Length: 100
Image 1 (spheres, rainbow, N blue to C red):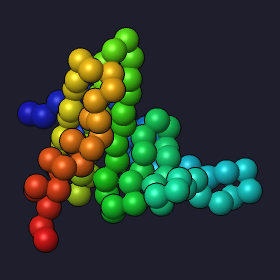
Image 2: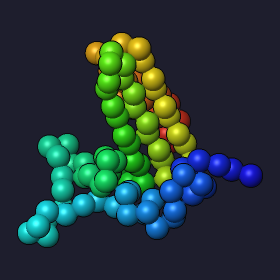
Image 3: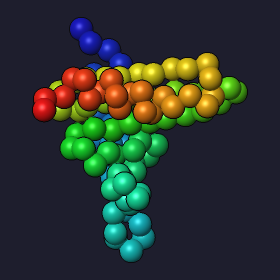
Image 4: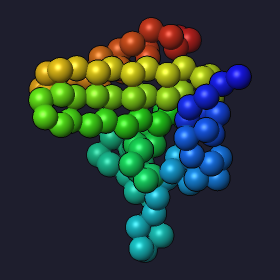
């Protein structure tokens, strides 16, 4: 039996779907950054279809969590160096598992 975020033992399925849905500004336009990624309740909704990510830095550490919602791949990078590019490494690891 699975556990964690993918199996709705951390948050309900409806809350999870809401968190992973791109938000909209008051004028109705979707939130997008300079790279075309969206944002929903703490998660970056990556322009790659079915991929969400979350990053953080605190007290000299840095983290990055990337989830492929379609294929089930999860990449988590944790570093005790607050300046380390955890996102870059996570994306590099993720690309190793993608069909070309």
